[in-house]
Length: 375
Image 1 (cartoon, rainbow, N blue to C red):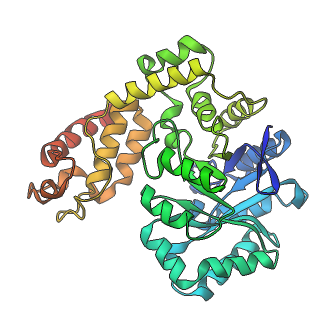
Image 2: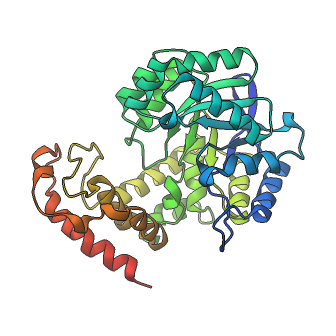
Image 3: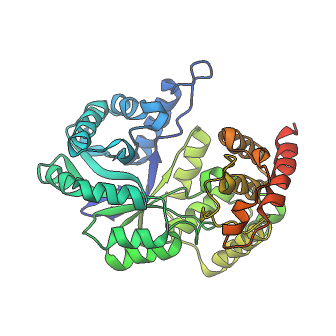
């Protein structure tokens, strides 16, 4: 397993994201036998970075990870977990969460501690409560080795956060399709200029980039006929020099072994490979059904429609033709589906992209409904 420096510590390039462990079909809880086998294989192969969080697997991920890794010397691996900022309204609550996480993880310290899923409002709440200073105290006591944050918002918000203090690292969503989504490549380059190492999440866009339509993947196969779409996505991220860890939520042994192969004697992309990957990305973008940027000017919808997420499912369906993921994302929309639209038009008055939202929501219902109904 190839490694890179994250602060003063060498970490394996492939990090294990502990939010998608295999589940027991009956209980829908972590299948500890299968998940334990995955972790043992990862440890044997040199994976050192294990990323979890308070809510993963309905609160069971941290405790399971603590039990599963107890058989190994603590210095052989690094633990990363996160403060659930949305649950914190007082400084003492943050401390309570942290010490409970230490208990769950069966450890005296956390190698990498993050403020979880920061956006504009959650960051300002954490800042005003003095949570970063509180975490710095824990760092001085040796209970936290490095302190950072994970991020889900606009570039301008990332700029505010990164420039307000000295961070040890940050965690960003980044892949070859999301170069302009959330912080995007612009945010990555900002972190690089400021000397803040980056951990990447969603390198295969929630699995979407792991299975591509044949016509879309044709440029990749012409260059590397045997390389999988997931390996291409991983190599794109790994070719960015300030990316130190690339997280993958691996559910099966096949996924783990494929990623281990990619990050053993890792090969950055060459110019011809970059061109083929950009051609693939452009082909996927041409399949977009509309230009929704998730700016959320259309929200809240008076009828309860989650307009951006409906368009995200619709666009994802069109680009990737992945029935399993489309069904999953359509189901997760719950009561916010497009069919609730009453045609009031208030969304169209505020949409900066001038999207005919009402007509498109009707099309979402027809297209996605028919797609997920197929066997």
